[in-house]
Length: 252
Image 1 (tube, helix red, strand yellow):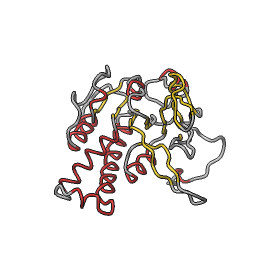
Image 2: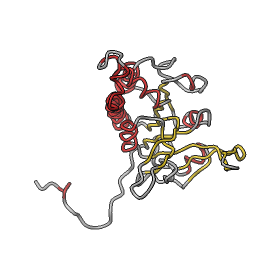
Image 3: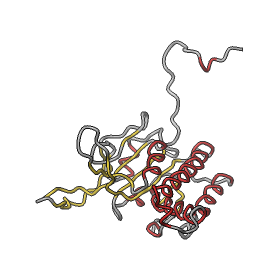
């Protein structure tokens, strides 16, 4: 029997339904990332630090994960048990990476931080554990049809410039290997910032408006995969975000 999966076919192009979005939102502390993520449909939050304690949504565990094993166990429970959750939030991804680093430091380097940092081997191996985390999240995404939201703090990271001087740009505060794997996996990357202006070489806050920037440029890592496109920037409001995500999130 001929396998039509590899045939060219004819007629109009078929547009397949998109799976729920896998998104990473990153920004400065206390800018409103967690409050925004808490508005996603039927969320459950995996805590890796204390900053989300006040979010009025279900949490697993009730207190932040204290080890990499606890974090992975949360994913196992969500995968195996029946539940009505449509969105999984991890807050924060940079603290999850710290749990991965702690595991590598103790199990491979026996607590020797100097060897852990030698030739950047330890942080690189931590990035491989982050890849394992993404593999587990993929199962939840596909088998439970869950929206995935990863929250991280921002940092200024070195960026290579083949045509001139290297520079620094905003990106999630993760190791190079970890961020490379996350960046390739997610469908959307949004940088959350309060609007500011530069006066005499110093950044000054310009009002209280907060934005999610989805357009990547030399100043920031951001962007959207085809099918999950967003405007260049939107107000930090789930209502505004949801207007552009009909059919791209489970629950709206």
